[in-house]
Image: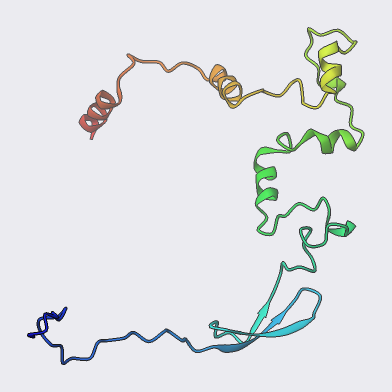
Length: 168
């Protein structure tokens, strides 16, 4: 070390460094079957030998925008829309569908309006039911008005719990 050069490391390392190997998981051959019956194979980590596609590029409006059979189809695979309609009715559906079917919405006018539609309703084009509530608050206030006020001293929840506890 007389030459003035200095080593970067003051101690020598005799151990080999651990170099991580890249992960290479096992790849299975999988057969993909599209909705029209056509098949192709892929290499994947999924161990299932066959994958059947319910939605794919052959039967979806995103990839087949000109296909008329795929247009205006409600996606209700689990039956959730049907269950909602059974429980709450069809008043929440869009009115564009109802007016296109030729239904008359003039019988749903409030009683204080005249027989002639106003300029505002004509401008809107009768796109919403005039009898339906505008907001969720209107809907809830309609139910609250029908309920009778509770009788009693107006006990708080804590006082009512104490009263019920004494009865036991």
